[in-house]
Length: 310
Length: 316
Image (cartoon, rainbow over all chains, first blue to last red):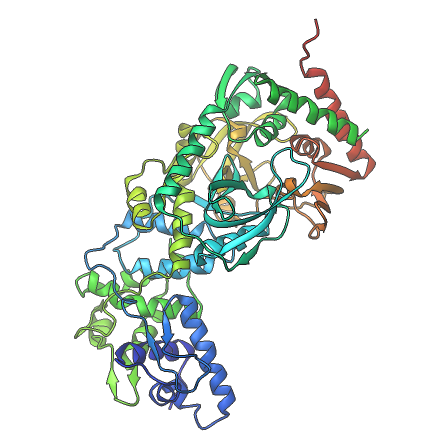
């Protein structure tokens, strides 16, 4: 008999478990799944290792294979959690929606989160017709030089809390934080974490670049409601709108290309230090009129570069 | 286009999802459409369907998937003779849903996608919320010209200011627009440099599509995901970077990972010219220090000193 491939073995395992009402022990699975039965006469340790590996692969793919008692017990009965294979029948995705999901998954290419996005995308494809290709030539990508980025992304997906050291703008020392992370997003080109501070119970935003230690995951968790997220997003939006700078932009300059205008221009910003970096990048064609604090920050920054390289 | 899926794991995922796809498409799908939809070739799809068709519980001798193999082979149609064990695709795991939700949120921050009803519907389904603050704004007309040129495979002309501040009118053969962490780059074949190069959109002015189609060389060019290439002429520079400015390294290629010592990172980067290096150093406002070579240190010093002259003071 032809040797069962890994794909065949995994599929067989899922199907056998799906048809079992009471769940099945490891031994019963060995008897029912061709890939295992073929190896049953061989080394039992090797077979156990293979079974353990398959369980992990199936779970990694997102199939909720559960057991009634501790899995180290030989009489543990395995089954697939109820409702695992049912989407609302009316749920149908358009070709355009599938294309958007493709782009969303593509954004994670070359990160460890790509595997989740790709596996998810295979399932989503089954919910739609043909994928549209109206956005040919657009390649969104999420990259981060920050080693904490993927740790935080995983903690969000797993609902775990995290702890890290954080240095606020202009602070001399870092503070320790324990956070229930809710969202990671880019604002003005910077990655910002929205999360609940577990010491104060307040929703706060944290710039990833200001995290000065390795992020660790923790046991303590807290619920965050969609309302809390929405409110925190609105507050940040209001904060940004309230931070207004007046700039003088030289005519026919790179700053004019970027801001789309020359002369006096008014713009809002999220964080004075980050914004000053944007302005320093264009320092030869842009001057700050207000606020004074921003103007002074830029002058100090230039002086510091001069001193550091004297 | 769907990505090419090759691993056993990918095939496992497709196998679990394909009967749901067939059911949702009236149990009658062209084999070629199904293959394209899941990003595999017809031969591989045939093998996968055949595997599903022969799956059996050895204890009960139950079969789970009764495909019409005759219709597959003779009519190019994928269908089931009777209801399959798996009639819908598996649900997403938390991690999968979260990865797609974050990707959708990322898209929603770009002007191309803001207000897109399909995107908003998806975001609602995934529990994601639209981005409150858009990415650095881009002129929608600029994007529209570039996208149209890419789709029609035509060259463009645009005014461009490079990192040294040099202004020129460039003819480019556009291939792709990359949106990397909120920054737009045109990836284009540059006939002047005879290579694919990255051009920040915010340094381009008034691009126009020409009547000239892109060359065969451009069409066949491989666009790497890496924005910063190292060229033979590039010089190695040693830098010391405050950990808060670690994204400085993202702008350059490096021969090795920087060393971390407390809140300071020390590393080496390649740069094509010291003037553009100086610009990146100045933009970090004192959080990056060039250590060596001395010519690079001097270039930063000179550039910063020039700026002190242009910083306005309140003196009469």
